Length: 105
Image (cartoon, rainbow, N blue to C red; front, side, top):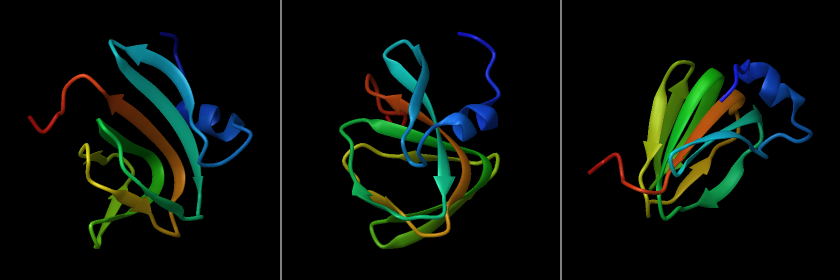
């Protein structure tokens, strides 16, 4: 892997909410994206997904519960549990997909 400025990488992406894979750690993908205030429809994954806010804020709705993740905080979206991004999320987000083993195990 190379040295990355995560905010620069996110800002260089052509569209918000469309991630770019920066690299792989084992079977895990390391991705970055730019949040722009818009909401994103509910999604669910077959693997755990780590959501690390680099700057800004990520507003989530998980099973009806509002969760605010701020810069420097990490939220783990557990496999099989739907989550949606609420309006007002902005900044730089790093996503780490964990397809091999759940971090909750």
